[in-house]
Length: 278
Ligand SMILES: Cc1cc2nc3c(=O)[nH]c(=O)nc-3n(C[C@H](O)[C@H](O)[C@H](O)COP(=O)(O)OP(=O)(O)OC[C@H]3O[C@@H](n4cnc5c(N)ncnc54)[C@H](O)[C@@H]3O)c2cc1C
Ligand code: FES
Image (cartoon, rainbow, N blue to C red; front, side):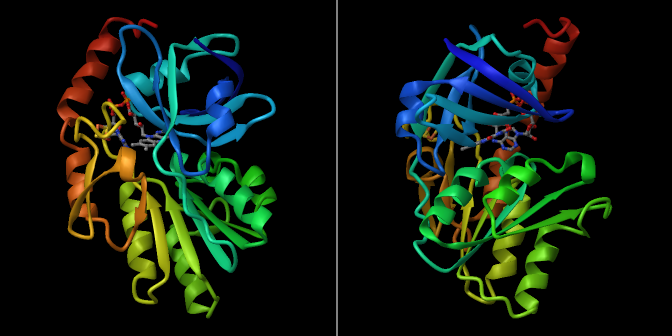
C-alpha cells in the first residue's frame, strides 16, 4: 500500500497527490511514469511522475478525472492509500545540456514539466514555459513551474488569464518574433502535441512529445501502447513515452486512443448507476 501524505485540489477535476513510495522516488527520472491500481479489483492506469523527492521518499502525481479509475483515485484522501504503484517505468527524457528550451504544457501535462524544468535549470539551460487551459480557473501549477523557469507565459481560450488563444499561438508568437529556440518539449493532449509539432516543423526545431496511449502491462508485452514513430512500430511504455514529435503518427495514435470509448463510457455508467462505490 502506498500512503497519500498530501492532497491538493488544482481544479475541480485535477488533483495533486504526494505519495509515500521511497523505492520509486530513489530511481525516478524526469519523463518516467508509474502504473497504479487504486483498489482490488481495479484496472491499472499509467500516470506520469510529476515530481519526486528522494530524501522524503515521495513521488507526486497529478490526476485529471476523465473516467471511472481516475475518479476513484481522485476521491482518495490524505491518510488513505493507493493499492499498487509500479515504477519508475519508461525511458527518462534526454534533456539538453545547454541552449534555450521552450516547455509547453496543457491539461495534466503541465505537471510532468516540473521535474524537467528543474533538471534543465540545474544545467543552466534557459527555460521558457508556456501553459494553457480553457480559462483562468483551469490553469494549474503556474507558480510552481514559473519558479523553475526563466520566463512563464500563459494562454487561455477565453483570455481570462494571459494571452487569449492556444499554447501554439504563444509558441508561434515567439518564433515569429525571431526568438532563438533550440528545443521544444510538449506534454498534454495528443491533439495539442500534434499542433506543437506542426508549429515547430517548418523551422526544424527539435520537438519532444510525451505520448499517452492506452496501456495495459507497461512492460512491452501486450502491445496496447504501440505508436508509429518514423514509420516504425514502437511501444510507448518501454521505447517512450517521449518521442520525436515530428516523427509520431498522431492521426493513428488519436484513432487508437478512442478505440474503447464505448466500453469506457459503459464502465463509468455502470459505476455511477451503482452509486460510485469506492
Ligand atoms: C505514459 C502516460 C502518462 C500519463 N500521465 C497522466 C497523468 O500524469 N495524469 C493524468 O491525469 N493522466 C495521465 N495519463 C492518462 C491516464 O492514464 C488516463 O486518463 C486514464 O487511464 C483514464 O482512465 P479512466 O478509467 O479514468 O478513464 P477511461 O474510462 O479509461 O477513459 C475516459 C476517457 O478519457 C480519455 N482517455 C482515456 N485514456 C486516455 C489517455 N491515455 N490519454 C488521454 N485521454 C485518455 C478518453 O477520452 C476516454 O474516453 C497518462 C497516460 C499515459 C499513457
Ligand atoms: S502497455 Fe503493453 S506493451 Fe506497452
